[in-house]
Image (cartoon, rainbow, N blue to C red; front, side, top):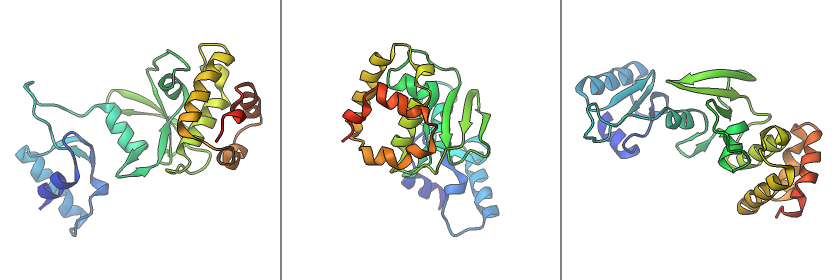
Length: 206
């Protein structure tokens, strides 16, 4: 029963969180069912409460999950739910504001238990922060942008004008509106208005 359920609901090498499984069995029985499948080699255990269906590989031991993928599923999004986003140098690198590839991934997540703390997913180091307000599918891109603008000079390799071009392109692609920004900007320090002015963002909001 469990193996069929997993194959129907999860892709190969997609993290499976025990806490997400919705079957009419007790938690104790569910854990035992997972252990049985692991013992048979039908699924693989990544970490406590995290499993996956292993892909076929010519390499001995098969294909394992990447720590980055597990971190994304654990703290940012899974099963259609958005609960976080990449921030800091990680996000700045993703949109080309900096060429620095951070050794530590920075993530803001509803699942953060402290304002700021370091956690590890296997060998991957993560700086995990609590959001200023709950992250949802509707506001995650807005909060991510505002977090970047809050400390823009810290992240930008180039001068503000060059960084502004990249940010403006990003905002246009998302079609963010001024009313959406205004809804959340009050959660941030006043210096954010300086960067919005310098990057001329109000001219590109939808």
